[in-house]
Image (cartoon, rainbow, N blue to C red; front, side, top):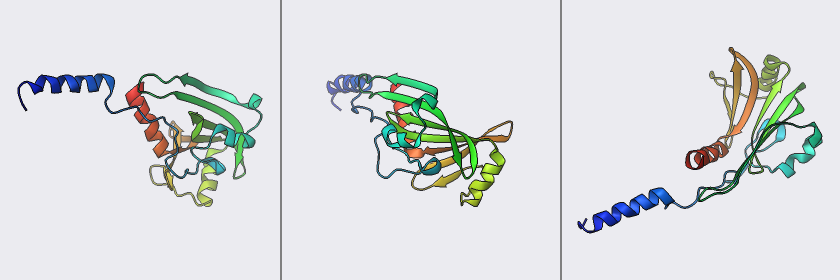
Length: 174
């Protein structure tokens, strides 16, 4: 590189780092293709409007988290709404928590009243858990068990593609 061009290249690189030459960060929640199954017929990337018919009246929702971060610079908005509703699956009652990012469903978690029996029912329905307590459902769902003191407390369904989008936003914009 010519000696006179080196300072220009360094300055250009510094501006790119400071101002972001790579363009804007993609908005989490934009469907990449087909949705992935979550809890009991819910699918990733569904909008809140698309799932409202399956939910109780909004007065029955327990809001867990509601945050809105407006777009700024090269970072798009990031709205997160997490709420819980009563639910039933495979004959087991419990609480269903739904996580929406930018009005699209990212994840669900179910806390049944009888976790061990519910896990048995999931296995009987065809869910195959690995030794680490996780399962996968194509195209991109990771099912996991969250434990407290070694005992499972809830089962979570998460679209790994969507989780990657959120992680990219977090590492670039938070």
